[in-house]
Image 1: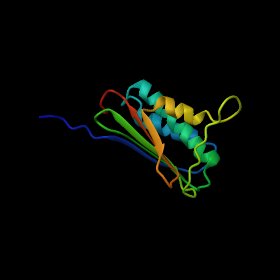
Image 2: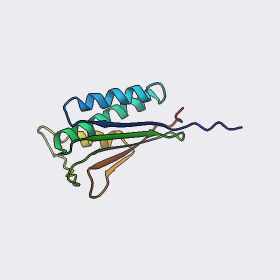
Image 3: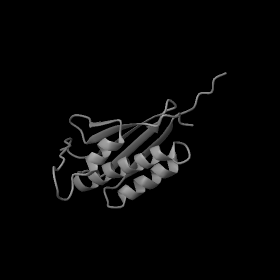
Image 4: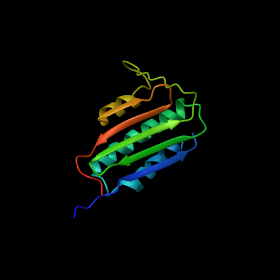
Length: 133
């Protein structure tokens, strides 16, 4: 009989404070370390903390919601949302200067990512190459 592995999930609500990114990292590490490949966990830690930091800096909301699920097929999907005004202004600063690197990092570490239109909800997908379990 085939064993069916349940997905691993994280559902976190954080206040938009400077500590939110480190709290999100700790929750991701606690939930996924030892259950996903170490390289995937490191990418996930970076992506989540970049998106949470963006929500703290740019989001006018009162709560940041982080949801991450690792499915048994080896895919990891996540979302970071603040309860802002329903518009995400994605801008990447070209050339030298401070800022603008967070979304470049997210793009480099994810298979796909984007924003649900008309929302303050950013989604991303990673591929582990091995099943969650």
